[in-house]
Length: 263
Image (cartoon, rainbow, N blue to C red; front, side):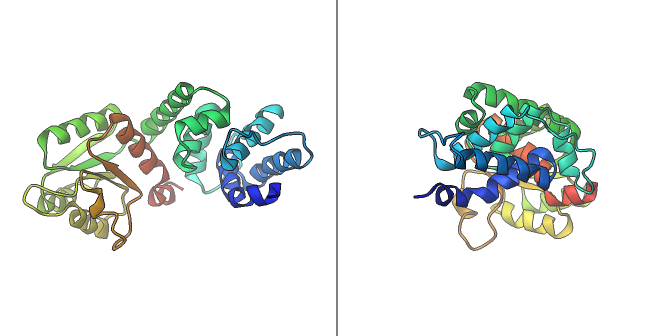
């Protein structure tokens, strides 16, 4: 298989990543072009111990470093609040965050791409999440019928600097809570105290407000049925605290309505 054939499926994604990293499609495309030219000329090789996609991103970063790893300051970006926020994150943290949150790489894959160890990637991601959460602090509604789990989630939310303005254990309580205070984020279980559905509660909330939602549930199969739009953020119980924290950061950062309102 030719080099182009191997890399072609991944080029739209590395272009997306380069644009997010630089804040400008033309600038990002220039870095991608230089990386591809280096591969075509034999100046760079795709590492054989990596998958083609990981290897392509690795070469992209090698070129980046070789050319001074210049990152744009975002001053020329217009009408894209998410891009401006990205530019305020330190460069290495920005790379680790985008590779995992936007591109879907695991921390181990991101470590290969950045030529660092996985612990360094995890530290960089945590730094990026801290920057994001400090800037995007919001009001959170928790829909959860198990008191201990609800308290654990509330503690995690507060650790990130957000405010819990409502907790609910049933569909009706959740709907009543949003009628009293609009949330900026909803964390919802599926099976609620009185047998009502967290899915239905969220559907009713979204009819009124366009807010990011994270489902935290022991019954993920009830969402992943193909009968309704599958949620972007789904965490299975028992959950790891860092997984919840990462999902909160990503949900707030990438939610379209938030970006549109802030632009």
